[in-house]
Image 1 (spheres, rainbow, N blue to C red):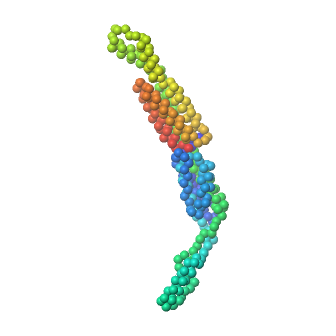
Image 2: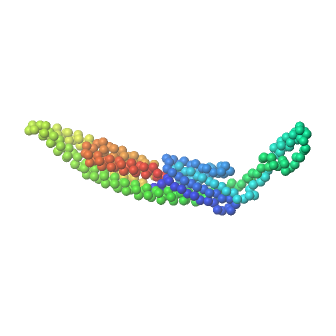
Length: 293
């Protein structure tokens, strides 16, 4: 199946009213599977699980994952005392009192107002529960992304099949013209010799040898046969239910190789033009295939 590598999916967790995870996944074409994850530091321990989950669903593409986290549970915060820092503040205040002989008005409220003496931190959360919520949102997001990639892939498939039909028409035209190449060459050669030699007899054996050499050099039967075969392989591969991008890329390279050979062997302008049309369509197919998984 021709799946595009371009897609987008978004989903949120809704199981726990105290917190919410939003997962966004977007992908574009890439030779391999390249996963980039952006998320809060508190979730870094889950990165390997996130990568593994994506790897099970996708095989190619540059995949960017964005996870945002909102915690509505205030009880997850707790205040803590930095006793060492408080001791240092008190020591400094006592030194000020002794050095400058000023009133000692040290109080709890005064010390508490100093920076970082009392600070808040999040309680350690249950990462198994968090993973259950994130994985659910990720699965829903991946479903949306894959559906978009499938829809885009169907459009690419239809366009490629249309171009394959155009290529096949040109191959048919080349095959028809190639059957007359040797005959046309013989007629031109005979006319040219008649102009040059006039009534002087011509050695028919030499002409036959020249025609045999030309026919062997100009023969494109093998190239045409392989082109027909590659077209069939390309169309059939589009219906395979697995990642096919690399295989399609190889087939298109082989098609281009055969078209180049036909163009280089051709001494007929029409055949050359049809070969150039084929190369043009092959290049368009190659560009489309770059985005197929």
